[in-house]
Structures are given as C-alpha cells and as structure tokens.
Length: 460
Image 1 (cartoon, rainbow, N blue to C red):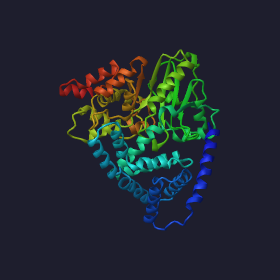
Image 2: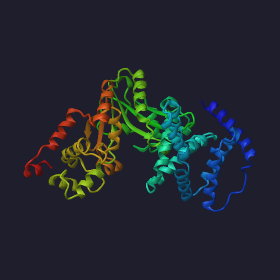
Image 3: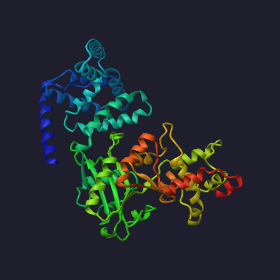
Image 4: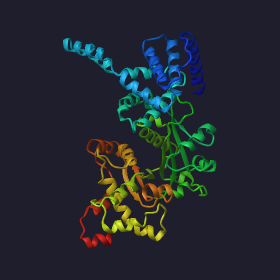
C-alpha cells in the first residue's frame, strides 16, 4: 500500500510542478493579512474556473500552501470567504427551479440538485487534487472546529467538510490492522500520543498493552493517510467482566493464557484525527474487531467494555450547585461533600459512598437527558447507539486522578450481544429507549421510589 501511495504522490507532485510553471505561481506575496486572504480567495476562484489538470493540481497545492502560511485571524477570514462567496450559485439555482416548474422531470430535478450544492464543496474536492491534500484538509477542518466555538456562523462550511469526509472515509476505504510490537515505530509512537482514555506512560506500558498474549490493539487506516491511524481500540482478554481498570493496566500482572479467556473487554477507544470529528468509525471498528477476535479465539463468549463516564462529576456538581434540584437528597449532598477533593477516598469511605454513586449514576444514565432528549453522557450515546446495552455500574472503578476528576471514579460496562445489537440500535434511535440490564434498571427504580424524609436521610 505504501509503495503505491508513494508512486501516486510522486506523480501528482510532478503534475503540480508542471502546472506551477504554466501558471507562474512563484510570484511575491502581498504583505498584509487582508491581502494574503484575498489572494487565497482569488486562487480559489481560479481553481473553480476549470483550469487544465496540471494547472488545477498546481493551483490546489498553491492554495493549501498559502493557507498554511495564514495566521489564526486570517484563517477565520478564509472560512468567512468560503461561507459568504462560495455558497450555491443563486442564478443557476433560480434557473433550475424555473425549469422544473415548466418541465418537471428527472433532468430538471438533477439540475436542481447540482445547482443547490455549495460551490465550496467542489472547491474542497479540487483542493484534494494536490499531493498529500487529504491530510491537510483534515487539519484544515480541525482549525475550523476550533473556530466554531466562537464563530457558529461558520457551521455551514463545516457541514460541507463533514458531507465530503463521510464519503472519502467511507467504511469501504478503511483498512483494519492489528497493532503489535512488530508495527513500525512511527505508528507505535502515534498510538502513545493519541491514546485519549488511559495515558500510556512509556514504551514498557505500550508493550504490555499490545504485545502480551492476552492483549490486542486494532486500528483503522485510510490509504490517503499513510501510517496515520484514524481510530484504535485496546482489548483485554479476561475470564469475566472487570469492574476496575487498574488490574487491566497493571504492567506487572501475570498474563492470562488466551485460551482460558471467556470475555473480550474493550477498555479504550481513541479517535486520532480531530479534523474527522463527527465522521463515525467506532461502530464499524467494534463490530469488525468482534468478528476478527472471535475467529482467533472461538472460546470467547462475552464482549463488553470498561468505559469511563467523562461528564458524571460535572453533572453531579451541577445538581449540588442548584438549590432547586430535586435529584439529590440531603443525605446524598452531605455524603458527596467528602469527595470535594479530587482524590480517591479510602476503602471504608468508598464502601459507604458506593450506594450514593450507584443511585446517582442510575439516574444519570436512565433518567437525565440533554436538551435534545438524548442521554447526557457522550460515551453512553456512542455505545447505546451502536446497539450495546448498559450492563453494570462500577463505582470507584478508576481511582486515578483523572478518573476521580471526571466521574468520582465511576466506570461502566456496556455489553454487546450479537443477536440483540440491531434491535437495541433501533430502539435507541427510533424510540429513545436505553437498553439496560435488570440490575441497572433495579437501581433506577429504587432511585425513583419516593421515600419519607427520614428514610431519605438514612439512604444517603
């Protein structure tokens, strides 16, 4: 794959050099930021005007190089230009609508479709002519995502990136590769850098995760981003469903013989490319890894996660700060005061707090909703949307500083049952149903049961 990609890249580079000579693009840049942005916009109009192939490749390369030289404010101005000047061709769209009104039919409908497409979509496609452009466009979209927080008016430009990336990074183009100790060092370094759930401390830690007989790591790659993982998952083979992360991450543990394992645990899923946010790979990754690992180890019976709950503590603290909140009892408020410091409590304190955390977690997952009516927790939305069920709540499953800061140490298991995945997925998206195990449902029912004030205090 690398050899073919390299040859293709060299061919595009050669075409671009010839095109650059034809276009005489080696001119001196105008010095001001406004002029630099205007110059890039002019090049974009030229690129859309229909230059020959060599000139188009050269123009695309020139525009991407010019963008790389822009400062933050100039990049915002560039996206403003895409939003304001590269939308649909209004005159063409009016003409297409009039033609459809006069002669409705397949041809006039097709013309409306093409006329309504923003010109920036075709512009982005032509940017992708340049050698190595896909990676640079992913980086460009990462810039745009950073600007959206204060410039929501640029969202329509972002929608066009997502629309195109959804096609370019279609599952059919993705390649699943196992990551092990024989994987090239430059890829292993990226696994260390991109790990987003449980920090990989050093090379020994990495080796324990990818080279032990009871551990596996898989990643999706795309032919246009050579040696750049898009997303990867770390898997532990265990005898039973784990309730805590420390034993899984322990580099001094005794590895389990894989043939003794009955459970595959997905304990870390990390997206690697910020610019591909919103383009879903995780559901395909989990399903393909389940198929892959089942072929290797047919003795496996259960497929579960050990997942963080990144928003739980912030949600609880929001309830604590709201005197009108009816979610927390007085006893629960008192108990949680002891967790003000983001440090793990001792064993007796953890046991005393366990029912408090379980009750609040049941409410958080099964009752609390976002303004859009979805579960509050982003990891829950991901796994429930993939067809998993909420299997078990694990208070103090992650006693690290990060775990305590995010969720009071709470972790959860989601379970993937092959024959239930499709119906769970449909129940979640069609009816908003959160599929949960009987034990989690029982905790939620207990949480919803009204209690006399005295009992509520005791329960806390």
